[in-house]
Image (tube, rainbow, N blue to C red; front, side, top):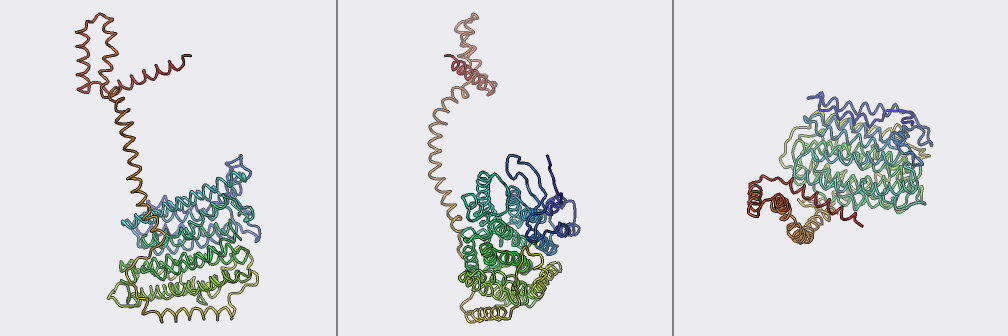
Amino acid sequence: MNLFADIHFPPALTLLFGALLVPLFRGHWRNVYVIALPVIAFFQIAGLPSVAEGNPAVVRATLDLFPWLTDQSLSFLRIDKLAKAFGYIFTINAIAAFIFAFYLKKSTQHIAALVYIGGALGAVFAGDLVSLYVFWELMAVASTFVILARQTDRAKGAAFRYILIHILGGLFFLAGMVMVVADTGSIAFDGFDFENQNAGTWLILLGFLVNAAAPPFSAWLSDAYPEASVTGGLILSAYTTKTAVYTLLRGYEGWDPLIWIGCVMSVYGIIYALLENDMRRILAYSIINQVGFMVCAAGIGGAIAINGATAHAFCHIIYKSLLWMSAGAVLYRVGKSKCTELGGLYKTMPWTLIFGTIGALAISAVPLTSGFTSKTIILYAAEQRGLFWPWLILEAASAGVFLHAGIKFPYFVFFNKDRGLRPKEAPMSMLGAMAILAFFCIYLGINPQPLYDILPGNHGDFHAWKFAKIVTQMQMLMLSALVFFIFLPMLKRTDTISLDTDWLYRKGGRLLFDFADRSLNSINTASRRIFIDGLAGWTGRFFIAAPSRFLGWVLAPIWAATGADKEEIESRKARINERSRRGAFPIGITAILAVILLGVLYALSLVK
């Protein structure tokens, strides 16, 4: 059997195997080692064979395990431009994240993060459903430990809810995969045809949308990410949702329902981000908004839309991580994350403010930032398809992003009311990581060509730098800023909680438990009375509670046959009972008697 063909070492294994060796390092050497792993993985990806445009799967590393299937190969390393683009940004972000986390002294978060990122890399390079599923579930488990690493009661509760939702999504995926493989005889993951849709493809899509945080399955994101540690929230923000975006681009390009799902996500995230008081929950809801653009692009389909979604995922990971770093530095120094408890930090954390503001401008798609050069591709694709309402919704959502992430986040955290907080500036490792990502935000905004060169398809005659587009974008941004400051007196932050769909399973879970406790346990009680205390109790008294008495009844005829009189027989029974009362007869006697009884019954069953 040909086990391997076209062998190339998967970048995911560098991180997965590397995670096993983390405990062997101590102090700063551990942090250096952890940073080195994604650096190595990045160069591995760069060294993978180049793939000709329009030939999406010319290089595969395969393992043949399923000879009864039409497509029998586990393709654990499918190399094409789409996979490499996501691989590049996953490793670049990991490098910056581990530089940011240089302050960590424990290896727990490093190990969980490496396995999580390795699972994400494995998923984007997987060429079949089975490999994808394995890495998909690995991500779910590892990311749960990333959340648990904060070791607070709130983190434990969030992690429990998080893993339950992702188990549900994984079950959707698994059930759909079984149905698709049974129907087609193939485990290949090369895209599903909307015209040949079936229950299996829809179940897989549902599993992907759970990880993409599409409503009503989105609450896990805003529930779990803010409860993770400073580093944990940063790492979580980049991988699960973007891996889901990758799978949608790969498997569901041109599926029209995704257009409207993406539009709903883009608006949904804005509304909740505007209502939110916690700075990290603002950023969490902002992820839903931004992923909505990518999901919509997957639904639009075509080379330009796929390029736009890929470019936007690339840029989003950079500026969103920069924003999480800024918020994480504040949390690290101040220990607070609510807008009602923050303000005036510009006085002592100016560099954190500057870098955070660059991320805020980039996410708002301000010209000369990376967000502008990527988001405009998606809008252009919608315009080219003649999708007026999706185009209008995305344009409005783009302006809305400026309200909650471009203005609200930096204003309420660093300016607003001075609450007398005078923390130190963020540590140098944090500032260094923020500087790296801030550079990318500006560089890719001024010179997006290096990004465009790694995109999977031909972007045609698209050019981000069109005078009309720049003017339109600036008009919308300035209008958003004007609206914000006009209504600022009405935007006073209050220490409130915004109810999301997680309320349903938080409360519903308790109600279900109470129902089970009060109703189903009554059935258990009745069953116990009938079968345990009744039938089983009688049997127990007969065979277990008084095995010596039963043994005496069995042996009495034998004693009588050997000449023992009635008085001697009763005396022997009494001695057996006394020895049993003192524990001299173990339960083994009962087992022997039970075997004898079963043997007799079996022999009787053979009699015809």
